[in-house]
Image 1 (cartoon, rainbow, N blue to C red):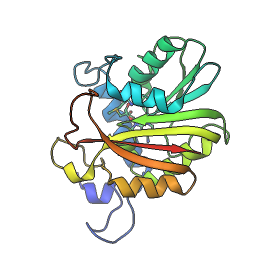
Image 2: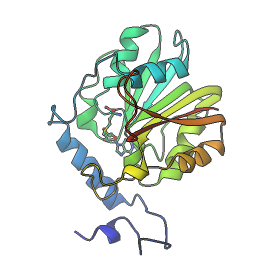
Image 3: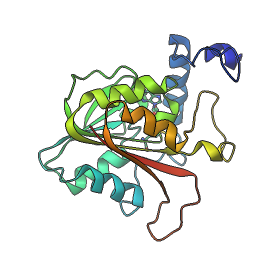
Length: 219
Ligand SMILES: C[S@@+](CC[C@H](N)C(=O)[O-])C[C@H]1O[C@@H](n2cnc3c(N)ncnc32)[C@H](O)[C@@H]1O
């Protein structure tokens, strides 16, 4: 497989940005459709006590009566927790893989599609979050722009993903991309205010090892 051609890159520096061509999109989709069968590495549940959950929840604020989007929700492990914690919230999960979406529990609205072209009106959501999914979007600027577009003014956005400085620490598919703090802060700041980022770990009392970053913003 010629990955540089598939990603639409002409070189490691310079050249056009990576493109989510129909060919690459189909490849990513089928990879995650297959991964949906791998419950060990792509679990459908998460320990609700982990810091990722607390951070997103604290940032989004009171979810009662609020409409929230889980971008690249996979099996909906985060959406499931938020739905259980706040049954009066209207939670939506969007993912490129329909096989992943099959695991999302009832009561959570689902849509298949790409985060680079979200099938929602401007300002449809009170808040949105993305956990370890933006790294697969390929057209990152477009995806961040879309997440911001579908959140209403004053709504909150949280992105949790991996730190570019730790690249190589884990095995990754060729399309995956990790981010520098300033890189995503800059993209979010195009449409949002109060943009910040911080290192996080799964447990609040454990010093972050630098792998995970959380970016927070207000539309
Ligand atoms: C590592 S999984 C994370 C899933 C979920 N956010 C979680 O934390 O459990 C990455 C997810 O991103 C989805 N994905 C990849 N590219 C996408 C795109 N362009 N639009 C929407 N979802 C995408 C995959 O299908 C997969 O479910």
